[in-house]
Image 1 (cartoon, helix red, strand yellow):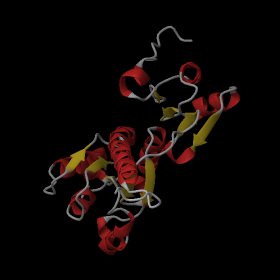
Image 2 (cartoon, rainbow, N blue to C red):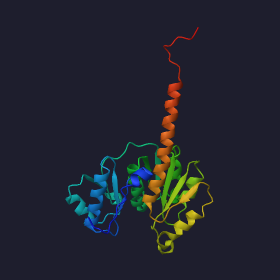
Image 3 (cartoon, helix red, strand yellow):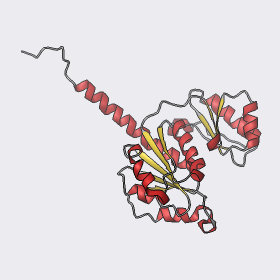
Image 4 (cartoon, rainbow, N blue to C red):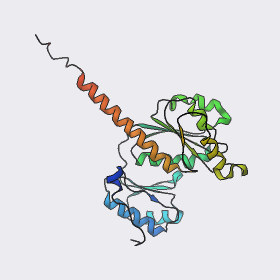
Length: 240
């Protein structure tokens, strides 16, 4: 393994999740080595590599790693994805934003949350969002991915009571400034309950959303178990 890489094998113990490989800027050999070592350290948990180049993809596919490729997110997963707890609804404004939404989706899965995708519901066709409301209104947390002026999270934040995580994308014409306009628009949202990630940071949004969703899912499961334990046994006789 490249001696310049120092992998964080203890991250799973500290945070509950293994280290993730950020593929951008790494050589193909470095991506393969990092995935190999992390998978060896955590064979029972999925290990994720994001922003994987074409060259690194070829190297991983030529290696003995049991890796699954998720093309829309340009990501690899090595190892079993955990049983999902809780639901993250992922809304994307347009088809051009879906590569970032895909990164949110695969990250949520690796981090143990269930996912519900709702695509192409941008504010230019508000009826599309309103007609899809039933698909996201009952989720535990909502991630909203949008470029251009970044208005969609504010609209969603005015329709729901769940936490909303806004992800600005670099999609747009010149005045969008590579996503800066969307970022500033989301940061200035007048809807309460909206928090914002960095531009195109589907991974960061996915981690945050999954941690909320799986915590809610775990609490819901405990409440259901408690309610089940509290129910009287129909076959038991009343005490004299």
